[in-house]
Amino acid sequence: MTTLEQTPVSAGMPSYGTIPTSPSQQRIDLSKPRFDQSTYLGRVRHFVQVTSPLNLFVTSKGLEDAKNLISDYNSGKIPANTDPSRLWRAKEVCDSTLHPDTGKPILLPFRMACFVPTNLLVAAGMLMPNPTVKSIMFWQWANQSVNVAFNYANANKTIEMDMKETAVAYMSAVTTSCFLAVGLNQLVPRMTSISPGLRTILGRLVPFTAVAAAGTVNVFLMRGKEISEGIDVYDSEGNSVGKSQKAGLSAITQVAISRILTNFPVLTIPPLVLSQWERTAWSQQYPKAVLPINLAVISLCLMTALPLAIAAFPQYANVDVKTLEERFWNLKDSKGEPIKTLTYNKGL
Image (cartoon, rainbow, N blue to C red; front, side, top):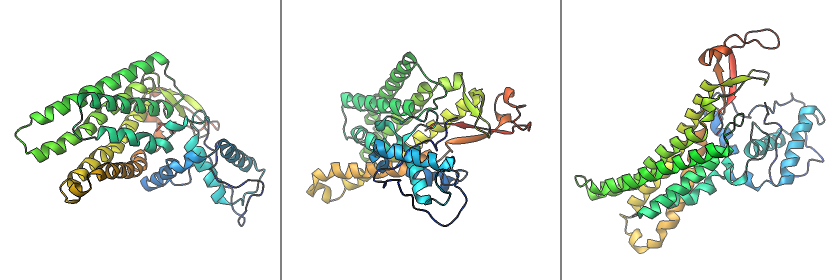
């Protein structure tokens, strides 16, 4: 099991030739996150750091410096009283840049730290007022293409999909998204029994409904092998004890819920804000302000919603063996003690 301590540091970090130290203290366990992952607040604090776009400015040298710092600290080459802020910053960049299963850098546009800038333009496109059918289909295609890339890049890598499986999942997600979006956009204008103002609001909420449904399909299709073949589950010593289909289903379900939670404020709040803006006198005086206001609200929603949503579930889940397949019930650790809980990476 690849641990996150084998990973990078942040841009602008000074040379590690001379490591600042603090008063004598116990050695930090860099194999674990800085904040308590058993609490929601601890997970939020962790993911606020991991998803920070500032981590995208880390250079290749900064990454190597971070990996070396953590490696030297873990091996005892540098003292236990090394400045903790340096160590945690190094781990923060590693967690943000490297995939926990492979230890290799995730392609930059599809790191969670790049989620906001990558999705900003797509979200703005889907929320454009009075869209044509071609516009709807284009932006839904663009959104699902981005989703496929994020799902693939951040999936559990103990099981891989081949190109054919990826292509089928991609086409299915895009088709579902376009079908729902176009169908709902045509349905809303026919709802003559409701007020025009309500119809306008419902029309602007169509993108969320389409994205939520298609995004769920996308996750389950892109990561379907994690259910059919299972994902690795690990004991407390980090040893894989086999693949579990039940763990795979749990992981994908949690990721799908997190994606819906991320999309909800992003695709519902901006339309409501713009509806209120259009009722003010300022909207008539400054008609060109609509675009920057929309982008600002979308950016704020993305930056706020992402860590709050993915923190809904721990990235590394500890599960009772009795909730998994029967073959895991009677395992023993290296000391001969019964194993009661196992761990798996759900992905992001």
